Length: 380
Image (tube, rainbow, N blue to C red; front, top):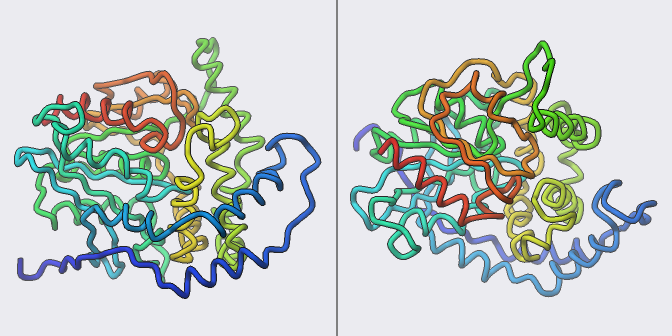
């Protein structure tokens, strides 16, 4: 393997002083006044935020959660000067198909904790040996335990190229790719690049209504347009800030764990299929696991920079010719009907899901795994 970047085994081990500092900061939180409404329309409510903070400080056990994540094989590899942290869980089935799965914001590799084992070892989880995958879950540059770029240029296109390099470094000269949120944008770009990627699967396709408008929209398109309009009016403040001034918001996210928690958990409440409250779908531990990835690595600002790099320049018109599978979850942020997606993707598989939202693998791991298996069976 001479000349190839070295793989360094990695184990998550957050320093004790980081955890001690967290508890001190939580105990010294300066609280704002309560919201003026009885719901989440002004943001995450004060009462719930205080309750979740108390749980974080007094009950939540990071060490046990850390140990659970460390059951997966993890590595660091340097690509283009940036360290990339990734899970690489090989299947016990030698004919398994390689699959790279990419998270987005405000997610992390913990989104995939409940799908990695069913994907890699299907015979232990209701599947067949021929359903098996070798799973690679990288953390985006600037996210989690990956390195933080010190120069601009790490946008969607460059990350897509880095993931191709990663898969080749792991010895996979033919593989599939899956993603949602930024992971969907990166996976879409990998589909455009083709390279050694054989097919892509998305749970948030990047597609918008036709530029000239829709003269006679179907019922599905009407619902999608209404959801898009509501999101643009009430749900885009975070992306405007992160795509224009990620450094400015970063000071608050780096200094206040409650600020970082609120910035993330509010989006879980808004974007999941949870009937208005995140704990209808996820436990407090699961919510805080994801927050901890951001807090422990001080990646509030560095993760936000991906918006500055890519948000206003995403390619939403160049067609992907590779076979594409799409899992359409009903509470997704961007609910693009098939009619909007057809011009952009070579759709060979489409599943309208009965439930689920933006964090598909975390919210509905069974539905997610079944659809990934079914689609990639067609291209193995």
